[in-house]
Length: 484
Image 1 (cartoon, rainbow, N blue to C red):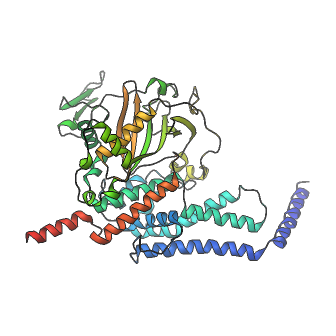
Image 2: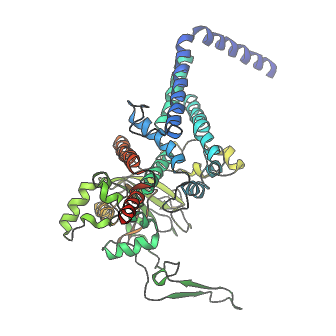
């Protein structure tokens, strides 16, 4: 019986397969395949021009009619331009990639992306060949879930998905890396002191001096001793030197979640924050002062109305994402992500990017390629509180704080990610992330791509004028010549 069923299945398969072969419009199909090959070929040639022929962003003829594609491919080429240059938070851009990609893997592989960053040529091989292959696999995964109409239609859809993944990627990882290259390129050219705000202590002290509501810290004592009340013999005792007195430790009281936020969380959840991304066009219109490394407060006004006016002129809030921590977690790095409509404060659907953090072969083989498709409206932990549809109080206050703080503290940094805490005593800024991540927050993608395009245009022109070491090095050379 099983043998008969198998033979019947195979016979039906070959009949259907033969019908598909006969009805397929092969010239149309091969036309689609040729189009896909041209997409890959143009991608390789554009990278070759940017990397090896040293074409500038403005002079390159690649993707003249496709701004997003040009922004994306040029961004990839910057990896190799910046490779050995000093990074604002690491010895080099290469080292920064190694440090920050150790826990990230392409879904379904389990292989940490940092492995491709130890060698210039391995990384180049990945960008030129592996990245398009991964995009192709992603396209195949999309096509196999679509209703089958004809082979040529499936091929057309495959090429369309491949082109989008390669040239117009809209996943959180691609936007994160684009943000990283934007601030890395800008900081390499400018060496601007605004980038010192990545240091948590620098951020807190400057913020406090400017009246920004940063999270409170203790500065009245030099050293802190913590003892376990039951352990003896010199064990269970720890010494911390306060950063306020030259040490390495920022000593703060633990903040609690506001009451409204506690209603959206399971018991024993950590402090849960909202990630808000802001962008600044200040550096686009203040080129010389920006690259000369002048103080951030070039346009600072004491009048609060004037400050609000200037921050609205240069700084824009792009997105908001609520990170609701998991039960018994120490921080909200383990969380459920909920998109936020920043214009209203209404919490939208939840999602997860945990499939990008599955390391090792065992996890990689069972890891889904895509995030969960089901609608997420509740927290994942008991008692599973309903989250979607709730409104964040003080949303506009939080947006006003981050936009004005961006202008007051670091207007020359193009993009900043703020960790905003809602507590019983008010809204606080915990820290900033300059190589920031939208995570899964919704934002105006075309506007953002045009924003990056403007910076690529500006920075390419400045590099052509002053060299890759930036205006500071050029200015120092000019001053030295004058002294001589």
